[in-house]
Amino acid sequence: VSSAESLPAPKVTMTDYKDPLGFSLSYPSNFSLNTHPEDNINYAHVELSSPDKTASVKLLVSDTNYQDISDWASQNSDVKDGSSIDSKIGNLIVKKIYLKKENKIILGIIWDGMLFTVEIAPADNQESLKTIANVLSTLIIPEQANYTNGATSTTNGSTDTSGGDDSGDEVVE
Image 1 (cartoon, helix red, strand yellow):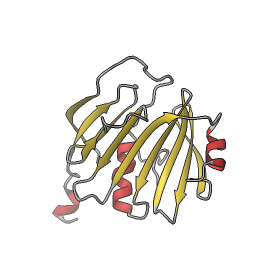
Image 2 (image 1 turned 30 degrees about the vertical axis):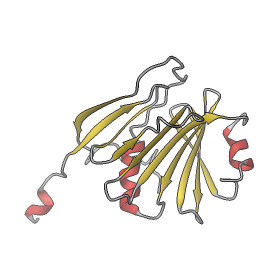
Image 3 (image 1 turned 180 degrees about the vertical axis):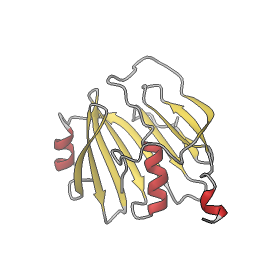
């Protein structure tokens, strides 16, 4: 066994983000966060990008007329031609849709009467997907949105992402 193999994986410093609507996640501190305060259409518009811009995640929460996520997946022109699988985050039903032409993955959720989407790009870089999967494994979506006028918060903390749950439940590959 070489000394490199016996060294523990480096700890990644994570920053916690909690949106005023109540959902939260943790992301690597070297990622950039843009909450798009100029966006007056969506309830939430959050983008995370890696320092070299090879990995990004966009979270949008908006009004919807879709009654359930299957309707959205089959009728929305942006995603209906993609390959989809069903999943869950907590008690919420999720559609994971792979869009080969755009090289991205979109997760769709009907949350408290709103459409919550998570757009992951690129979809073909395994290292980026592993990092994004770690971020998404921290995503907490409460049963109901917080409609009070709260403030977005971020906090720094040290989190070891080398171990953790490798069950694959929320890993997008």
